[in-house]
View 1 (tube, one colour):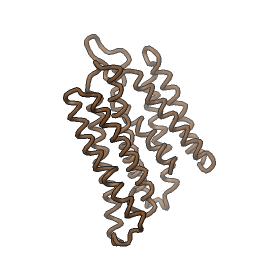
View 2 (cartoon, helix red, strand yellow; view 1 turned 30 degrees about the vertical axis):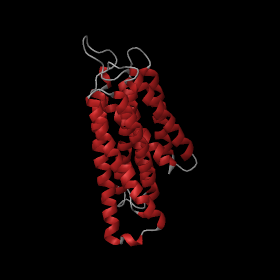
View 3 (cartoon, one colour; view 1 turned 45 degrees about the vertical axis):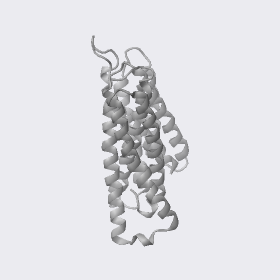
View 4 (cartoon, one colour; view 1 turned 90 degrees about the vertical axis):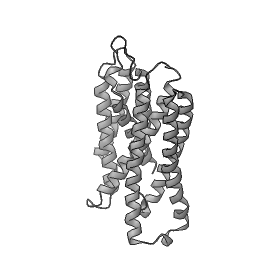
Length: 260
């Protein structure tokens, strides 16, 4: 379960970075504010590196060489990308970011496919893994971007708006994926068949992991509109905690078929 969470979060962070048009951050045109400073990309890639190494250490004894190769490639690209974004003109930073995202996508897909019971049942787990990655990445990136305004207060609000929009879409996609799983389960079973632990975790998964972050995302957007970035960051801190709890709870419900 821990390896699943680490892989999803690492992949989601790199997906979110692709939304921020990094080509405009190295040296913006005169009179234009950068979309996001290079330090943000460097920090995100270092976080992705730590998560990838953690997943690699956790899976090293059971994973096949294709998965280990993808994880090693992702770790190498994220490290080189962090070095690139620390330099003045960020040489190769965009290419390394794309390579990191591709390697983590492949790793997440291989790991999910390796745990599927059959090829026919692969679509559901893949939808669950990537929708979870999008949600975790968007929530964490939005929170870190809000924190970034403390050191770059004159930065444009566009990156935060983009990440909040991505978080909104990710919440809708994730709710649709797990809603489909729950509908499939209730088609074959009655809710009265839930075990005691499932009755405890299922409301937590939906209320804490989806409903609460949706409300907090709306609150963060409203505070961002008045450029109260410090308040938005505090709200997003709570949203990230709720998203983490929701996705960990979903992993607990996955064996019963109540989450993808």
